[in-house]
Length: 161
Image (tube, rainbow, N blue to C red; front, side, top):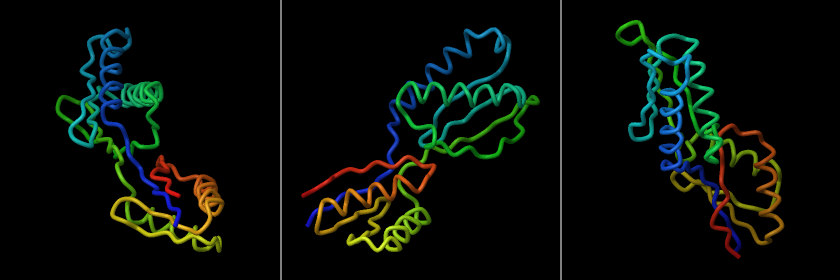
């Protein structure tokens, strides 16, 4: 029976490369001279340290631009609210999304079942397996999910005949 998996994985090595580029650009830009701005990754989190709101917004833009250059979808980032840090600076945690969480998986399963397609979705941990009798039905399911406008990047892998 043909099937495919829906997953959400972010290449952490490319994120590291993008963060190195951001750090290099912060060191070279005139508007960041003398500032205490920094960006670093710990596990699946990025910690942004900025002097004020304006620099924090500039760091967001730099991060998104450099991630896009490295072909990492910026939708994989979940920005938490900024908090005050020592010395009148701001610290913001950005979570790198890995895997499909339960709510999103349930939403995808509901959308597939409501469409009355002849496919069966099944939640398997942090991914979703969709199986059906015809490959055309599976391709229609992929088109349906792509049309849902989900902000988290999804990949369709393991397509089996």
